[in-house]
Image (cartoon, rainbow, N blue to C red; front, side, top):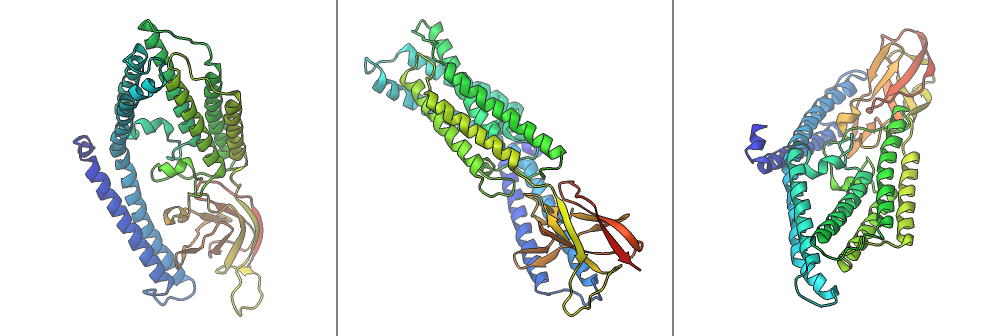
Length: 405
């Protein structure tokens, strides 16, 4: 931590990123070699598969450690970037506002109290945000309030934060302008406040929906290594999300529209058309509806003896492989090897770690719909329960199988 305070965060981040990149490349190369059978010892039965799985699991833990190291140094480096963005915006306002006012003001030029109030308001907000970023520098500066419990940027929080900043800036601008004796027309801000209430309520509702569904195991979440800008437009697995993307785009358009109105009419709150307010409300409702519908509860549909080419039909015995068929075994964002190694199958009183079976470019076991595990000798003959515990900690239903002696 002392290294970070000494101002070497940029170097720390670069070094951690390079180490993580090298470890990921080395892991992928080794996985592909093992998938091709290179370096695999000639062991009987499933011992060779277990050896491969153990080797990959050990290397995956090393990759995960490098990822955690990168995630620890990332906030100390990125918080300065948030300050650059804030003061860059203030500088743009300082350069653009006089020209914009000169084009829109009736007198066509001259420095007025309205322009002074706008720049002072921007500078004051920049100073306030600088203090906030400094206090939360260990958590990403100004990004700290936007990061969810799963260490990803929250779309609903980012949208709400944009509207909060715009509303506070408009209120501060009008206050300073009125204090300087300028003409202020406070009427007309009801629509801006309506949109602000809508997006803030959407942020609170989104968190509540996710929490309730998470506790009910109707949605699964695993912690990300670090936040990424793509989190605003993608789901936990990194795939583009239509609900998130439309919410961000509609809100960005509405914020820019309100900002343009504020520049054009600096003496009054930005007046939004009711049609635009309705569009934001519809976009927020779509986003929340998607939150209610996303995710799948892990479930076992059937358990069968894993088929082997040329093997005769037979009941399940200890030492045999069983194939568990269902859905939701690999949560979104848990496709990396470190998370895959956390998948466990309970067979009676015995907990069996699901072996990693490599393939060129990925793994054939475990997958989201099938798991293959051996029945250990410690499982007593007779009827016994089978359950799957996913990387997120969610537990499936019980399925009973008959293990023959």
